[in-house]
Amino acid sequence: MAQKDKKGVIEAAGGLVWKKEPEEDKLLIIHRTRHDNEWTLPKGKRNIGEDWQETALREVREETGCTELRLGSFAGVITYPIEEGQKIVLFWNMESEGECEFQANEEVKKVKWLAPREALKLLRYPKERALITDTSCLVKRKPVIFRDLRKTFKSSSHRRLDTAIGPFQLELESLIEARVKETKPSYPWAEFSTQMADCANQALELGEIELGWKYFLQAELLSVHLLNDESLRDKAQATLDEAREKLKDSWRLMTIQQLLEKSGKNQNDAVGVDDVYAAMKLLQERHSNTYIKISTARFQLMILSLLGVFLIPLAVLILPAIDENVGRTNGLLLISVVILGAMGGVISAFFSVARVRVRGKIPDQLLNSWITISRPLAGAISALAVFLFLLSGLLQYEVKSINLILAVSFAAGFSERIIISAVEKVS
Image (cartoon, rainbow, N blue to C red; front, side, top):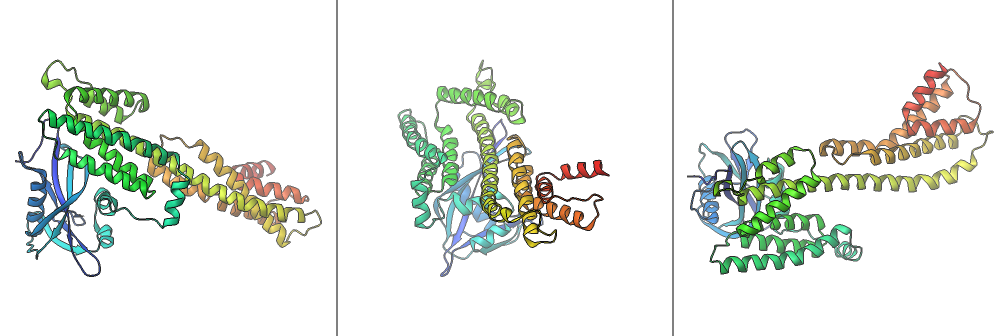
């Protein structure tokens, strides 16, 4: 019977099955029969009373036909919502030491041995792809010069992670010791939490700060399973208070409140570890989303700043050479129009980034990010178009002043609405 508690948390386990090859190790992925394009990692539900590692080995053997498997390191954990509630899947690295005798069945249609980069192209689910790229402490090493620069010029995120890991590891050790004294089993959560914390340290040493935070937050989540009843209630209350303060009115807050607002009058009303885990996961996802949005805005501002630094010296060099005697078809005038249009676009984009709300949806913000970055190019094209309209006589009024042409070029880059409004009034 599959493991499922009354809160709708379904437990499962699986494996990243590797085969040693002379040039590059290969990874085994499976094609499930229920969907035409569902390539996944082998995994399945845990039976009641079954050890997690036993589940992982059993499911991999059943789905791939690989019977000779050597269990390796813990590869990571993923969670995702399903119709029945929440699903948590633990993965281990495994090495196939013999031939796999696969036979198609109702669950699995076919299997493939692929290089990791090829497997990433086929795997359907992003969280499973993430396991291959980083969750197993397979941190991509940056060139030494970049690692040294990151250590020398530490970001605020770097310093926060550096400060957080040490105390957390001490707290984790004390939690594990307390479980031992209380003669309560701490496996597998103690091992998983410790390994994720070690991965966070490794990522920090390599300057992979975002990856380090991912490991650290995962370790923090897994450590909830080590808390005693009193500490679990305290953690639940702290999570609830933080959610009320930071989430305001949102679906995440409503869900966290449903999970954690228990009356506590009897055992059935007590907050369970799965409730706290799910609530913390939701809160972490919100923080991660906010960080992504802030990083997106920071990336936009960096690109716009670089464009501004490039355009300003050009304008300083070229604009003084423009006077009223310059012909309307002069090349310098044309370049000046383009530069001023692009500068107007840069300033307009800065204002656009400043107006972005952090609560916006991530896909919308990512799309708007590229629109914002392309704004200087759109500004240059708008300014050039307006200038050509003036020269061709399409706009029925004569512009005698070069300075006015340059001003109109900047305005066209800053906002096409200004130009449309002006043309409508003149007409």
